[in-house]
Amino acid sequence: MKNAESMPEPSPNAAAVNFRPSPMSDKVFQRLSLFIHERVGIKLPPSKRTMLEARLQKRLRTLGYMSYEKYVDFVFTEQGMEQELRNLIDVVTTNTTEFFREPKHFEFLVNTVLPDWVRRYGSRQFCLWSAGCSIGMEPYTLGMVMSDFAEQYSGFSFRILATDISSRALQTAVKAVYEEDRISTIPDRLCKKYLLRSKDRTKRLIRIAPEVRRVVEFQRLNFMERFSFKNPMDVIFCRNVIIYFDKPTQERLFRQFCQFLQPGGYLFIGHSESLAGMDLPLTQAAPTVYRRI
Image (tube, rainbow, N blue to C red; front, side, top):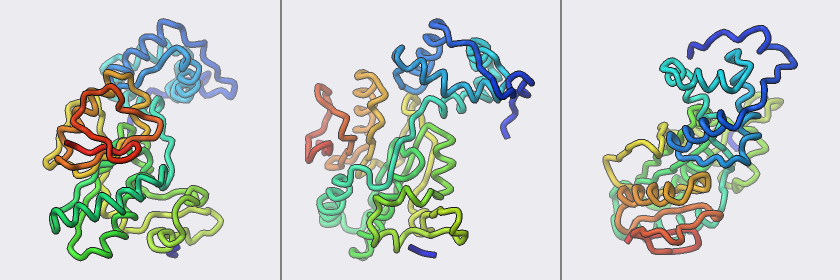
């Protein structure tokens, strides 16, 4: 391994150690869950109410609200939409991730997709999209894998677009600093090439090397809003994202993905996900790997 967003002032009660808002009512939960589903596509069944209450407590404390009802009333104002919406989205999104998660995908990318692509297209730039990139571990894994591949093929160039709806997750991704215990899934050879250890050894932190950070571009993107790309993608990684959406939303999203995927390009999804029953121009190439017809 190589070596102001304005907010209402919180009230004194909200800052108290024993801060405990009144329970979230059915009406408030239904109002929030419907809004979240329409705005970001995430489905929150009644079983998620306790989770939502717990995650929102800190926001209520920060803003000085003693009830979820007052918080939701604020969110739905013009000021709330401007100031608080991104915080609400950050709270409800899940950012579970790790380096080299589902490693068979990266093996398939390196051993099958990339060599075949080089034979077909030679020097054209390879475009890859990490959709739902969380705090950056997936796109940086891809950056390491593809940088390593590029060393073996003169003239091969690539770019990685990484998007997520969570502003907080993207801030962490751009910094590219992680706790040292998160790197155990990265092969030692790649650790030595592409990771930098903190000079202060007591912090036990690592940072992704500049040559990998440079090949990843981060952007905020909400799948429920209209989006487009100048050039189609050769590969899309969208893994462990659609599990939070209902079936119609999943199919609508993947149909849109296919519009931006090159013919012959590949879509990678999570091992807990399925495209069964969806009418999509894709054929299965490997477990949870699909190719655009």
